[in-house]
View 1 (cartoon, rainbow, N blue to C red):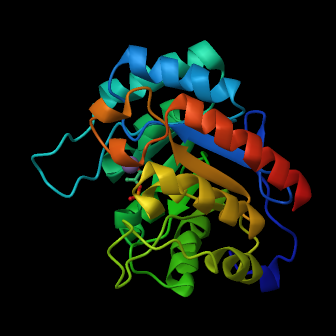
View 2 (view 1 turned 60 degrees about the vertical axis):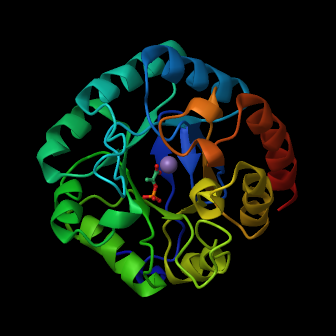
View 3 (view 1 turned 45 degrees about the horizontal axis):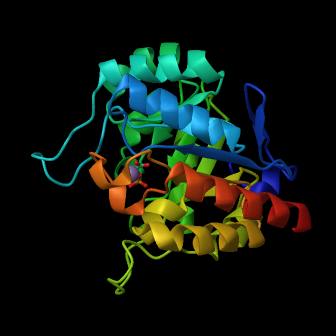
Length: 263
Ligand code: PEP
Ligand code: MN
């Protein structure tokens, strides 16, 4: 179902007023984690003003250490709904357990499956039964074939609205958090009709490298971007070092829209 051979036209995923794929470009922006009502509403308003079409914010966080901030959980989902009420922007947030499928179906607009769960096949099958689009991140060390097969797991259950997201992979290089695989954009778009977006934030791991990677992704034909933005990066509970301030995000969006028109 994900293979371009049997489905030559590009899939366009529609979320509210936003479209992703088939020549439609959309930006998703917001903090790594939801931290408070003030924070999520302020950042949502800021990124919307700069042209983001959807907002992100993690409520359930897949942290390397069990002692790190784990996210606000279900309370975080309710704060995302407050930011949605304030802006009208659809919500993108990560699911980590099949036990929350019904809650996400009720409250969330795009269900993110994170890199660490790309091959959690039970989770993929369960989100495949939901009606909400799924943003499927590429696993830390997974091939294009494996990534597309994970999309197939979701689609085989009936949910064909899958957005693929390249977010950098593990390589021998340690300077960056991950290595953005720019080749994934043209390659996976040739193999599959699904939209491919890019997360330059988790690729770079450093705020100052987000802009060049975002522009490289647009130039390579990405269908969208997902970018971490925080109103106080120095005090962020998660991923502050890679988060753009609303001002930096606004500046980036000016360059992105000029480049999108060119590509
Ligand atoms: C995230 O988007 O905050 C996240 C945890 O991403 P990834 O799964 O790509 O590491
Ligand atoms: Mn993050």
